[in-house]
Length: 419
Image: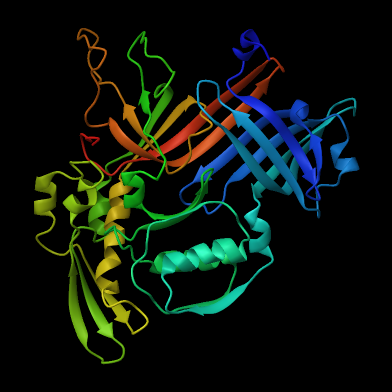
């Protein structure tokens, strides 16, 4: 492909193939009209929809149902170093439509991460004892899901006795996730998700600090005729939507600021009051942030308990479990009180869990001039990509458009300082 031809392509595909029985590759790149790839920090797998206009009777010659069929692809975004290879298992064929002359049909391949195969036909029953939760999660990914992908772990603390009864691998991981205590981060807000770098068993604080190997990119909602380039680490924002701006009642009603527990020890019968107040400064200081909540808001709402709960405690739980787990509620509330969605040009290296710097302009009257670097301190700053939809659309065979819809969360109130 020549340089002049590449100007019509937002993304360059080396191949898109259907793999039959793990060996026979059937090229379908010329029949693909769109590809949508979905990632989320709330999902253990990546999903993909491939829309095809079938001119080769694919469904008749290679029945895609009740067979182990894969879709493989490799692509690169111009202006971005490095490309990506992806592999999915075909889970369902849907939305099949015939043209008026019965010469072609179109359908959508609904695809999932290939680990779903092992997950679907395997059940676990065991007692996890004397093993760190994080190491058990990695073992399940390796041995039960048969995955060779990278596994990033925010190291867990101590050991617990956890009964896993008739659970499939992803269900077992989710149970472990709910019981995990972090060694290095206060929140214990563990997530288990997949992005194109591998599987991630990490806390929200880990994401705020930045996943290993991630690099912040600056995204600008431009002011007028901006001359900012899209090359390198500076990108333009095509569209912006503020979904949630600082939901105060969620933070308070959840008991996030001040919780009192009645801890009932099953073995001794004793009942102990356990008070939990989050250390907000400790949450953000190592991440190079400041201003998570206004000081007067914190002072006012930590004078009396926002919530009282009753909990049971036994020897299978760490001694500090009842104190540490309520912190999760606060950090989840803090990181989801400000949710933004932006529409941007595609980037094959962007993944859920990545961090970026968003610059949004200050709204002002038409008579007031704004400089090229005048941006809102309240809305701008470092954000975490919580969800991402990669959207590839083939337009008339001469142009391939690649866009992304990003859902962003942030842990700060007002200005965010990047260290």
